[in-house]
Length: 259
Image (cartoon, rainbow, N blue to C red):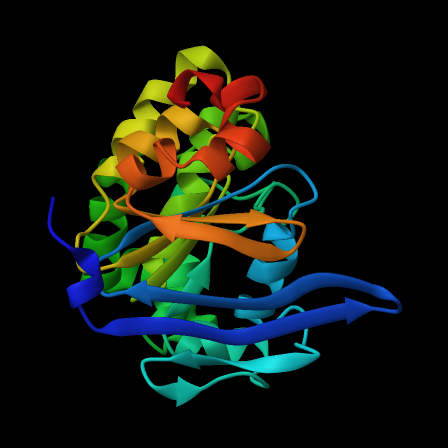
């Protein structure tokens, strides 16, 4: 396996601290995402994974520390400007696009990405480059068969696929995948796992996931978070054989098979 740490760092968190009153949810976290990485962030429930992702994406401001994207300090940038700079998190689409089809949804996102703004309804039929990109995404994410269904009637696995397709339509250089298989029925998981594995290699990915089978098949770098603190970081092999990790995480419940 290629040593991903030899590649340039695209997203860096340095000494991140987040306090809520007297509670420290993120405790001096440093994390570097390298170009082309498949980097998994794991840890038990309550470890602070969601807080860290909210800090990285600008949903929460850090109490201390800084975040840089391709060398530029983005610590105080609002979420939409981080997206514009190429860092995208998978969306919870269920409320946002219930009455729209995947075709319409992707046309809207692609049009906005290309500066066409409110002209997306015309773009749906009149902009060849928008049409081409939508067709590519629908095929890549196995959505062609449901492209004219409204989101609210689609199978849950297809909705998760659409969520990732929307994120990729934003043309990210850094993609944060937030528990992509959470709640997906067993029969719909394989398609989603294959799609995640086939994401473009030039997109650097930070994956937050409880499913250890997915984590160990996908990641080339892993960070373990416990009580808001980085316990350790390394390759999947190093993490699987780390005694501390086995004790606090992999030795319990769903991850035990990798201990």
